[in-house]
Image (tube, rainbow over all chains, first blue to last red):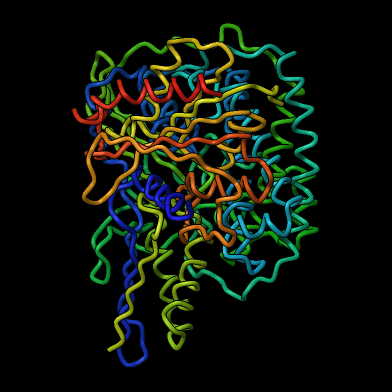
Length: 430
Length: 158
């Protein structure tokens, strides 16, 4: 039966094409080449979107990712609405932010508990962690379920939400429907604060990533569903200037395309968001961050688990705030008449900044689409961190070095299009 | 919180990856029959969602695609998963991404947390083409009739 069950692991691979691999070349004790093949950009969807009506886009982009479909919807509706000169009212904008908070809660709980925490506690995976600390893993699953409850109440279901559309929602929930959500979220807030204290007690290797950070930002709030783009080193620009600053190109030491920010290395994701936007955390989230020992910025990739926990607290407080002041949008959407032009959208997917661009013809048909997800932006920074980790661990046997490299990659929770048996490490020692 | 329910059918897969869509296709077919006492769901196979989906079910039937080297596309495998048969010391396959956790992880996690359904049966259909696109390959599409038949028999036996 064991063998049969392991066969099922192959089924996870059925969703996936290609095989991830890390290749490290060391010459005379120096790492000379690091190649990480983890990511397959959503080119199919870019092609698939061409010729589709502008109103269909969010149903299609939601399918790109089962973990962060709302992010793919949010960046898309923003871009389309900017072309069609539509501006949604505050009640619709608030409902969208509530939906996105659900995705953050759900995705962060999944990463913290099912993937990242075992690394810090000496367990090979969450199954072993659950065997010894069942109550802790139950807390994680409860937290994730709370996020799913938000997604279901607002989006119609937990994966690939069906209730969203350009211009708003097919149906806006009644205030009474959100009250039970409030109860779930108040319990989840306790769980999230407990999670922050728990992860703050882990041991974190000394490590700081040396590159610029890029995140969406918005005055007065910790940006999630919209905003302009800012870097930690002082750059700011609107979404439409993203392609002028973030450029993908070939590099000699890697087979993957690398993105640069004005020619330099950069990272997007929790560390970037926290460093750029931490002043805008809610009081409860700020308190959790202080108690966890986080300052105004964080550049230690291992501590990304603490940032995710603080962001989970934040997302829950935001969700509760929105529910308390909820006014049911009526009508639930703004009509979005077709228009020709180019539009851009940015939002903060749980893993980082997600950029979309669309070009529509006068009938609203999509002529072209560009999607730049966080993982493709982070590829170069992850490789740079791996190079550092590999150099430090070069004397280790291959299996130990593999574990070090896997842990390094898990700090970033990349979207990988090829997962199981993913890290086939090849070390060429010359 | 979900109410106790007699049976759940979970179609796992991505309809935009051709034959990986067999689980959702089967779920759609079963859903149309509107069977009393059977909840029909689709899933991407992420473990916590599977645990939630089969929580307190007396019978959970999971249908997914499987890729086997040298296999026969469209061939159907049935596995009855029993807790006592699951070896301790299961190791996830070195996943570095939340996107890489799958059904086997879910089953072992459920066992560790005592959240397996009373009876769990997994049907796996061998794939031909899991490239990007919307339609099932001919051999996998052809298997849908037999698959519906055997899954219905399983659900009725529960």
